Image (tube, rainbow, N blue to C red; front, side, top):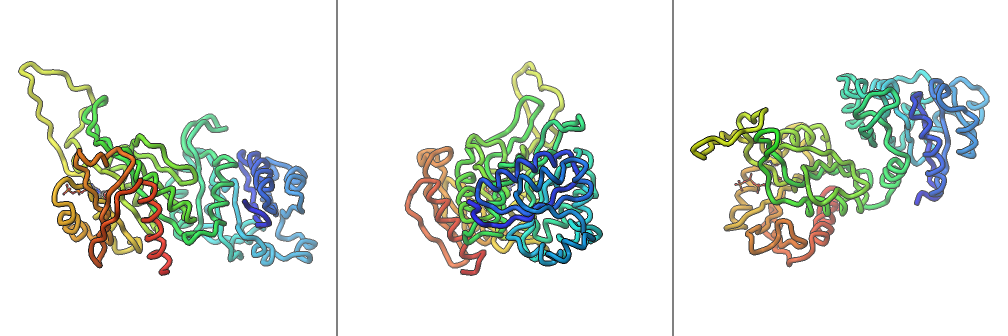
Length: 399
Ligand code: CTP
């Protein structure tokens, strides 16, 4: 619930502005107070009257409106809110924010505010993918701004791809998370999960038995503690939890790219069962059976995502946690793995077939930290996740 929480909603000039009308209703249904700000371009898409009628509040739209300045200056306006939400955030607004422009009411408010800021980008797919927008996005993330969406789909301009503004209810969920009061509120945590698929040819791939259950449970537990969770997942059987930012990938190489672009984060948990090998050269045609019946495949080593992030000089998360799925000498192997990969903790588990852990409901883990090994009793994956999330929160918040 958002009872009595004040949201300063900046509506940019894009076709998605029509969804912001519904967004206002949804926020108010949950008890939020919405102060609307409409950019000049925004007035081309929605009328000031409909915005202020739905918000039930005065609309602010121009920096040089002297009456408003007398009533409430832009500094005060920007700080009277619990959250500043920009929806839709156009490519132009994002560029202004990244550069620190202050040439109209919206950009000035964004410069003057000391409250958390969230943006819901919406633009044509090419504009979203443009290097300049991606640079601005990275800058805004590094500045601590929360980003919700965009989603992939059909666009008003007739193209298809990422660029559609997140749906009002998704934005509301992100607002609720941002204003949540758990110990990880305001923190960003990355979780990798699921198997990877490494193509052999267009129809075949190398995979493993990971269901993604432990990673999904962990993402949900971290979300419940108030964290913004970036969930980078391979093709898993267990669906991702609601209320996290899902980044779907197929291969280890794609997973590395997704992980690197999610940084910086406060903690990174690597629960994915990443394939160590890929085909040296995946065939772009279906491989046919040959007479004689033998087949030779040539492999190349995949990047080690956990080791890469553990060794970063800039942007290394304060806590890096790996998993070690072992079948023999579990503790010894996991300790060696912690050293070799340079991570802070290893969550070790025995995945021998008889344990039923891989793909099952329960987990039996040993947590290996710099202080030694802790044996946890066998419990459900959700309980492992809750206990691990609480330990992560202690480290991240210094509690
Ligand atoms: N991992 C990763 N990238 C890889 C391989 C593994 O990020 N290319 C991460 C996993 O997400 C997990 C940890 O490293 O957190 C250990 O994975 P595991 O498969 O047990 O280790 P391996 O590196 O495969 O080591 P070994 O083959 O010796 O068991």
